[in-house]
Amino acid sequence: MLEWLSDQLSISTLIWLFPITFLLHDFEEIIFVEQWFKKNYNAVINKIPGRMKPTVQSLSQTTAARFSIPVFIQFVVYVIAAYLAAEKQYYGMLLGFNLLLFLHVFTHLGQTILFKIYALGTGTALVITLPYSLYLFYRLLQERVIDYPDLLLNLPFGIITILIVWGGHRIAPKILPT
Image (cartoon, rainbow, N blue to C red; front, side, top):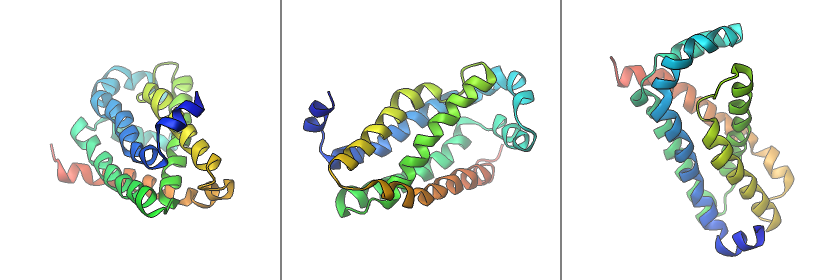
C-alpha cells in the first residue's frame, strides 16, 4: 500500500497536504469547542493539574470565532512552511511544525484517557494527523530528502506553533470582544 501511495503522491503534493490536514483537524476543534466545554467542563476541571487549571478555565470561555484566530495564524505560517519545503526545498519549519503536531496527537489521546471521555480533537488527530505525519516522515526519510537528525534539529521550530497558539488565544478577546 505504501508503494502505491508513493506512486500516487509526489513529495510536493504530500507537503502541500500539510496545511489541509492541519485545517481538517482544527475544524473539529473550532466547530465543537463551545459545545464540548458546556457538556464536559465540570467532568474534566477537577482532573486538570493545578497549574493548568487557569488555562483550561480560560479556554472553556472561548467561542468558536475566538478559537479560530490562532488557527488562522497557524494556517498562514503553515502555508509559508509548505511553500518553503515544496518549492524551495527548505524543510526545517515543515519538520518542526509536523513533529509538534505529531506529538500533539498523544496529548489528545492522553486527555481522552485521563478524562475518561472523548477529548476534543482526538478523532481527527488519530485519523488524519497521525497517519499524515507518519507517512510524511516515512516518505521524506525513504527518499533521502531528510535524515533522522533533521527531525530533532528542527523540533525547535515547533516552539513557533506553541507561541502562535498561546499568543493567538491571548489576542483573540481583544480582536473579538464580547
